[in-house]
Length: 198
Image (tube, rainbow, N blue to C red; front, side, top):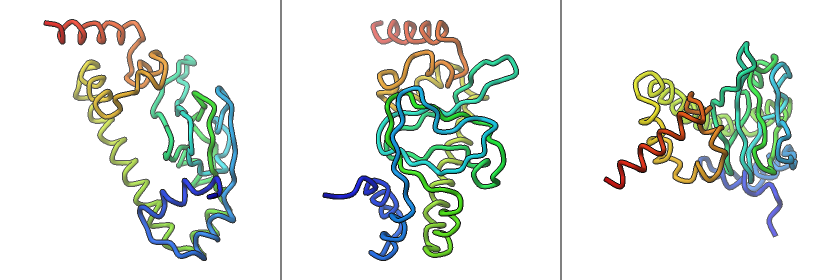
């Protein structure tokens, strides 16, 4: 039977080649944890001590504005990396909160262990470059869409890329991600349903 950390190893090996010795080295640094629904993996003002890979479950990444209003910037599901990358890489206080939407199982790597792995398994830096480039590309596209598309168009794009999103997370969280109220999102969905019938 494979160890619980095999998910992350498979994910890494789908992007770079790893020898058995390198797999053993990486596995020796992985921390397996389980979080309950509602628990925080990371919170703003705390220094991000871990890079977190989701084995199973769902999380949201959000920040609070000066009025205490939540703004969701990303969702994370299985086979996904989450965290405040700026806080982790600079070891300074985070600006983002990472909270579990469901019971969630993760694998984590601490900052010191990550630095050691970069030294001992240099190709791991290439893996994370690939992951970060993909994340940066997605975030850039989202910023452009937020400025150029209507809320209805953004919702349609979201449901095309993540068809089960409305079943995976509560509607008010989808609304927050889109930058609208849940009432406005409800009106958008009614409009789309009406158009599909006509």
